[in-house]
Length: 287
Ligand SMILES: [Zn+2]
Image 1: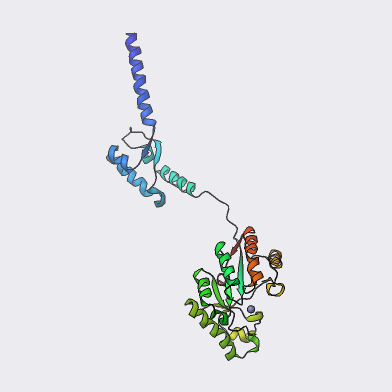
Image 2: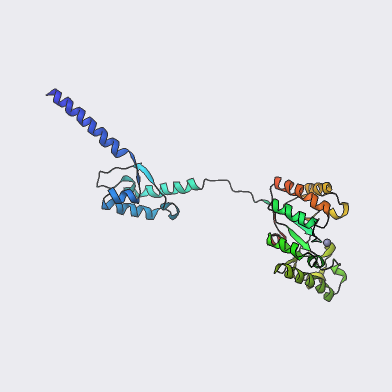
């Protein structure tokens, strides 16, 4: 009698281990295994729980949790509505870990005046392309008609092309008709080269007054960091000037017609990138 009890006990133990082991082992609940193995009510519960999940994760959720088949055939995760959202939110949080808010990046604009030509301007475009930096070129109409292909390249490569007048005259010394002739003729040349009219202009010498502002309806863009490159024609001085004066919201004035300015550009970009500046164009600056 006691032997039978022992054998029965062992058998019961084995069966219990198998049942418990099976019923608590993690299973993946998804549409496929529910369709093949679950009861109708489980499938309904699954559909309901999927509806409650944020749409973004519901398609991909695989649900690993002890899957109890007893008690009416409903898996615990499906009976316990409160848990679905919690776990769903957890998944969303895992996708987007909490990060401290990012500081807005410092912005700076590289601007080049008086071009284009077909040597140093090309070198500058090559360097900008190499570093994936966008700049603004304030071109002279009289140079645009000499090198429309260079201006077209500027446009294709995403730089801003702005108006620096036709022949670099001081606009404040001109009457309204002469001002328009200087600016409008350059705008037409830019349109001829690129198919687009400029929206900004830089008056030659930075010379601007109320009557220029009133007559010229483009957005005037001056500068606040002068490299003086046209004066010293020294690549190192150009770089040092940028290093000494770079600031958020800075508009750097350089001239693409000088070889020394083209030669300074690579080091200028490397310095500004190292200082974590974001390069923007004059148009982005105005908006
Ligand atoms: Zn100029």
